[in-house]
Length: 121
Image (cartoon, rainbow, N blue to C red; front, side, top):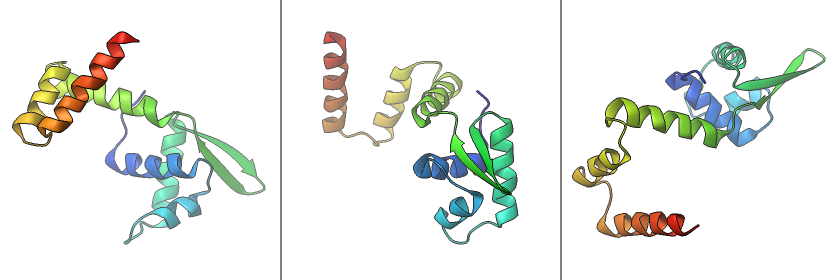
């Protein structure tokens, strides 16, 4: 799986929400100021070439749908972040958020409960 650029990620997020769409649907779903149609169309073609999208042609219109499941991309993206920035340690990742005060003690306790429940399955 090839890493996406920031612009590609934004467009993929809209496609994952829409599930099946034409370029105009993506542009309409984007925040103001909306990028030009041609820019979005170009990014969509790149996403298709990278294997992230399926396309079907109806007349002269292409309809796109995700080929990669959003959760699969999240797993890929997060494992790369952990590997690149946290010495391949999820413990280091959690420690970072604790030190930055981005996780409260309550949230940390909830995470521990989730881990413990996962061990029992």
